[in-house]
Image (cartoon, rainbow, N blue to C red; front, side, top):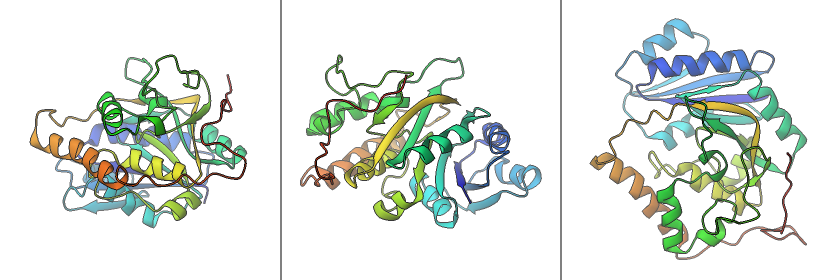
Length: 278
């Protein structure tokens, strides 16, 4: 099997149906599987899946197990050569799956890939090639990790190695809204750290992938629409605990002893130029 598509859902019934419809159309000519991990939804999500998509593999959790753990549940039962993690609030283009698989097949050095993302109004989302939100950028500056994310627009705003909207190039962090990973990479790095309940799991895994010597790519020659439907109140205790707790977990893992990057002989971690396609 070429591709396993995994979606974690929690009370996103209507958006999930849109996402699935777009993925089914995009996967028409691909040997793929769809796996939905429902995190204790209390809307009509599970019933909708049973009725409208009976062929899709469904893992129905009784409670919200968190995004990282749910993704791991899907990965553990998947069979594809590539694993694609997709948010329930995204719509992919009809050629998106063909194009991302074609790129990965042609670039064996690629461990993972993200694509160009736009919002519901068609505006470019800078998280597509930056991978980090402003709070995470501030956090990495604070703990001194900014220098290890040279391709993530953390420091110098005129950095020549930054990736523009329509350039294919290496990046540090893959956005978890649409995150394609080669299975042997997961076999080497391990799955998501389940301590990152809702946020930061993609940052941690992307960093571990780079530590293991794999390259992450931004591929803008296709796109997804991301509705960014996270409705967790930013002033709620749940948000504070999960979001800022993720930062503390990351710091505890790496700030006291920075792991050494595996670098092939004669290759610099941050060479002066990267492969860039216009």
